Length: 229
Image (cartoon, rainbow, N blue to C red; front, top):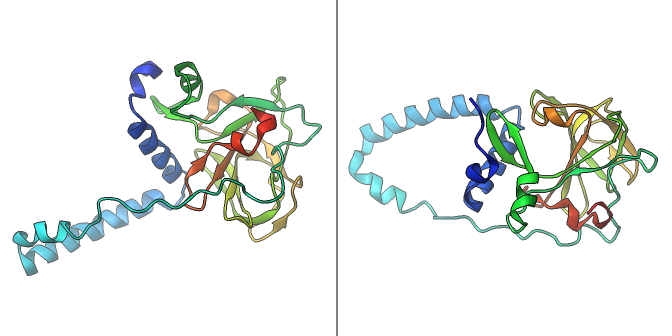
């Protein structure tokens, strides 16, 4: 099936935010098993609840569910130290795709869409690649502790590093990972090399880099990496 044009697919900020959340969930290995287990538990719970209390209590129960949860404040400055580009200085890698921002122009928003599974997804980070398509060394943007190292079937090898300020930097589409979970890394330390993944298959060999706040929401890396704008 031929995908719709970007301007017809992304129609509102609400849809974009929902897809960003789903994309992050898909990146978790536990997501689909959790869905199946959760669905089974939900069915059993509902059956028991109706049997014990009756359907007339549903309205009272739903009133107890808050309409929305308070949003955690996102830090404007990650640390007193400047964030470095997540690519080695001699890599010759350049920015190839930016963060999807609803406030940007229509052309910029369309340029920040990823086509995957016959759908256009808003880009949650910043991509880097070499013009000759070759691999390059990926480095830690800030000093921190490695909290995740895994191979994912969609986004490829990924590393997550938690920093003192509470933010997390995420490195996806990697090859030749050189760090382990629990390890402390310095800013500029090589943590792997750029590779490929299925989510951005057309991008070839590249690094997908994200910055996430304390609430795990994606933040535009450009505000921390002015040299990459």
